[in-house]
Amino acid sequence: MIFDPLRLAGAYRIRPELIVDERGAFARRFCANSFRAHGLEADLVQRSISFNARAGTLRGMHFQAPPHLETKLVRCTRGAIFDVMVDLREDSPTYGQWHGEELSADNRLMVYIPRGFAHGFQSLVDCTEVDYEITPAYVAGTDAGFRFDDPALAIDWPISDIVISERDKALRLSSAGIRL
Image (cartoon, rainbow, N blue to C red; front, top):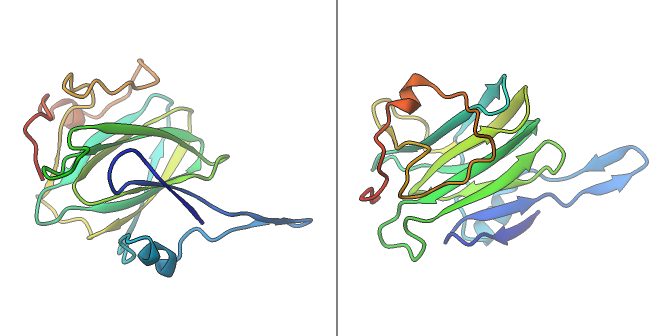
């Protein structure tokens, strides 16, 4: 695996190193020792999937409130997404900044999102599936978030015709002032 640091402190793009032969290809998707060698959380305890029927489906921006801040390893196993993370760590040099990354079944990229970030994504094609590895496990009542169209962030979502849940529409508008 190749770990490429992103511009947000502590976040990474992870590329599999494919071993290719006449049968196809093989690559490690996760190795706790490699993650620890890069100073990353390696005890990911929950695995979740998200299926998105229509292109433009937007989920986010979500996080768990302290003390249950999440670390996520995200990849797209079918279709393609525009994945977005926002640094909400008050003491971070990249506090309040966002980063977007296209993840697809074809490019096989993953993103590592450290504790203290909000996360969301938009499906770029119909029938998209996203795979998450998360720690700690989901804790009911600690889920939080802010609106995907928060003007304080001005996230440049690629598809303007969105499909969004009533829950995500009802999130507060301003991320300004959220400090984890």
